[in-house]
Length: 285
Image (tube, rainbow, N blue to C red; front, side, top):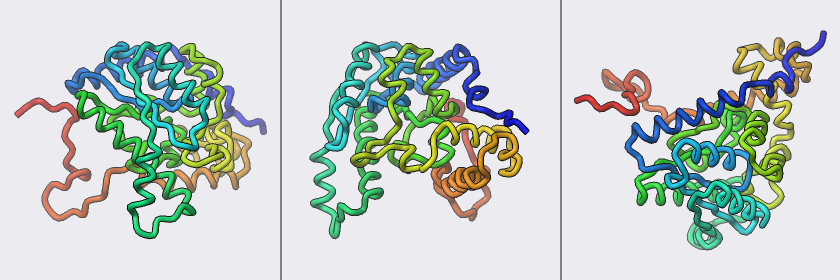
């Protein structure tokens, strides 16, 4: 039986519609919130570049601020690509080197160990988000995140780091689709084809760490999440090994805590997050 859920079919979507939908969402959200614009961390990768382009289309170049925050493990070409894109878009940008901030953690935390690669990488992500919110606060802006649907579903982001944002404009688009949207938006090919990596430690790549390609992840997630298939049905529909499908599904299940607000135990009549949720932009009294 031939697989009928393929990457080609997943990529065959209306990118004009996606662009319009996201641009309208950004403009509506920012304007209704009373914010003056949006701050974004620009890494030189495809996700942040696509998001910055959409923000600029939605708000205009004067209402978008980009922060480029390299660390010693950041490849020089990433900084170059980020600066070039900011100049192409005509948006304001600052380069904020976070080496000294990161060094203060290692010198201030008792028993700090450089061998704790993941924990130390998460520190970088949380430093960057702190800086983004500082600039957002002093400029009356919101923070726009750059996570895509693939990363959000498998939990490939740092809780209260790059996951701590106000909006996620490309959060409903799979990584493979983001690359196609980047081409649709006319981004430089060097950015569109660049291997994805949070750059939290030297030599890190997303697919290398995950042990599976985004091409496979996206097809599997589409079957499991969008079409609500069981792993067995997803195997038939995608032609992917059941072991790989179960590996991806375990990531979705075990990282659910990252996609939720902190859990509150029910004590009173109305519990925040369970049965008490206000509209985001409620203006009535």
